[in-house]
Image (cartoon, rainbow, N blue to C red):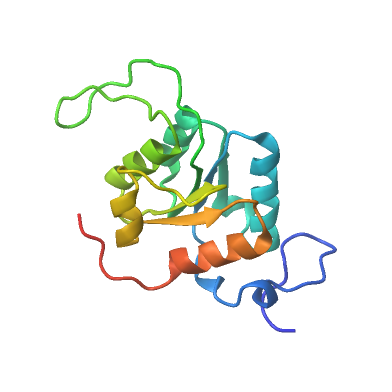
Length: 173
């Protein structure tokens, strides 16, 4: 076996045996936004087993936490639960164009907000079914947003990371 060993002690497998193309994801800042504590812990554990280190990983349980982590930490990859519930209404100031800033109502809106703030961010939408709808369809088609089907499995996470870090055409702004 070759490749980087899992970060979790006592695990004999090697990350390259699960996903030989995730090397480019290692060392990147990854944000996980998931409101289910068990799904959040599962995704965290799988990322660690695949070789992501704790300093490169942040977790958020809701939209306000996600926005706070994003603003302070500027992740390069974000796993976002499509069914994520939005945050409570509050005064978030205004956007540069003067419109009131508001919390996203769900994972799709959060993904769009984060991409608007950082067009280079790689977003992976996590959903039990294939994401669809007018908000996400053009972003999925263009490759600006990727999708990962639940249940959360190591093979799904590895494949999503490989796709997120694969070379791509320049991102239109």
